[in-house]
Length: 449
Image (cartoon, rainbow, N blue to C red):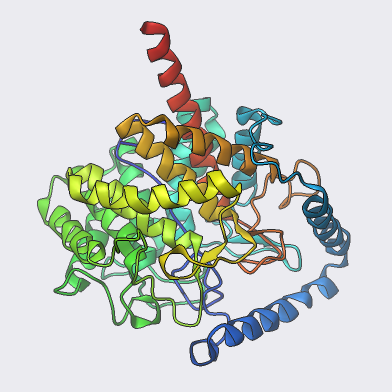
């Protein structure tokens, strides 16, 4: 089943890795010292990166006013926003209008080579093309083209696919990092790009794309550890991570596309390994980003990958395992009108900023759970979350800002500070398209009864 509008087994995913290929949809390699010094090292590394990027203002002083405007806007919003529990339920911006704005940002971020930029920085402008994110944005573009009939989204998906095919290594793997920054094969990037190849193959029927997808799947299956994880060369920090359930999801999709159960079995081996890290509290251990907090983005990654694998592989146990953390986060959102940008073990503590991408991913998780269970509490929470997401979208400003999804709210928060990120736009678009589709189905069923 699709996570957006098509009703098929396709879907999303992402990251940025500050020139190192860190497959964590975040500038996960902020400092070489971060692993040794914990949060203080991460903070120092983040400050160093921002200072380095600040030099971009010298090359582009026209970005100074938009930077000041974005900082002031979020400061004013935080100061005056209502804290009433249900103040977010009133629709202030039509979903169709917000969706158009979000997808327009993605189309504007497509570089001449066909790749989608990782981010627009308030300090340095548009980044280079990012293979990983380009891969899992492809299903989003196809879903939007199907829902809207807009040819430009279809053309963008096809252009992106051609570019990705040109990057594939002889082994079948794809490189990490931004375009030209890393020549090493990356497990996570290959898995995320595989999502796009599977969808492009289904849409086009191309034998070349199918062969490319199978080659990527073969490399992933061959490099998988005996316990079902991926670690060592090709894995971020050479460690195993439970959010690589996203890779398993891609393999499960490939198993159906290629009619090859070898890929399905590889997906289930990883699924079993990831499930061993689910705790009774709902917490998922093993995200394992040394020197970094457990951002909501990566928690949601783990949940999305397991949930979609569970649906594709008909694994009731895995589906039920996801329901527990999804329900914990739903209750936190309903009672606090907020999800923390990062959590400590067992969902304790929590950073005050919002990880906007993680919020959008949780909306996708709740909507998928509603689609399967018909439990209206999931739908209700997702609709409220989507309203908060729409209200955070800039409606005025320059290209790169209008319709952009900031890494954090406020924009200077700990996750991808001072950037509007392409994977954030991808997940917000998915959430809004799924909302539209499920509301149509729900209203149609209500009328029929």
